[in-house]
Image (tube, rainbow, N blue to C red):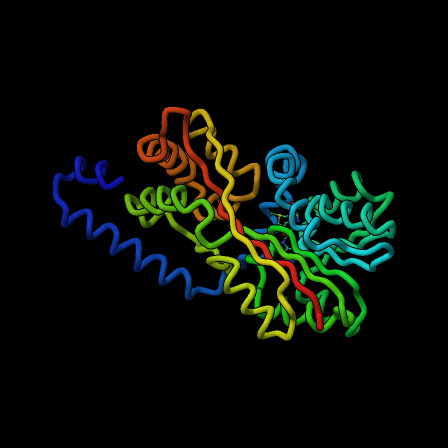
Length: 301
Ligand SMILES: C[S@@+](CC[C@H](N)C(=O)[O-])C[C@H]1O[C@@H](n2cnc3c(N)ncnc32)[C@H](O)[C@@H]1O
């Protein structure tokens, strides 16, 4: 986009003005309480629920499985799976423990898929994870997991509640995208909006953490012991900019981007976003997409 804007105007100062205008727009939108990120996230996941497992679970399940292997839930453990989505982790917990596991998610669409696929072995509840945890008795669960959803809620508060609801010796396993997941793609989206700051109508207020270290620190400060923490990245290529946007939308990763754009500008912004991805992210094998993730496994002392 730097190149594109400079060729538009030929003046770096005009380019600087656009980035300053975008910064001011982001700041003013971030202070505005009107549109609720939670509702936009749920609406985004409702919309993509039917294709979510093809787009995300089938490509990332080995990472969730690695977390579950390290968590190693014991037979008959009573398990809660937070932000369960379509229920892959919930069903794995149930299979490994030989007992029905309980999945919690805010999106009705994701839960419909979960019940359809895993209703025979798991129970599912529609709720905000933090409100749900607060409603649970202390020391009432043996295992709590949270797969790829902690950053949508409030990590400090959620981990505090997990520590409260776990029984002594109970285990916790969390895997999530980091703040820097999709950083290259995010930068391209900012470059798109820097060309037309007025098209940005909402800023998603999410709290993804930079790495496993701050999450492990939160666990310790909340009185939990950390057994393992690790970080990693999953990289893949797609054919072109449009395919990248389609793929990111289907996984839920671009749900915020859709709602960030004023409807009348949506097509133009998405077209330009695809062009910028082509310019900046193209490699010999196609458009490079990198999901960076963090994970922690621990227990209540
Ligand atoms: C990336 S999906 C992860 C789904 C599943 N755990 C998995 O491993 O594939 C994130 C999920 O978090 C859910 N979610 C986001 N914020 C939530 C909240 N505050 N309370 C409950 N669920 C939430 C979304 O509805 C979505 O299903």
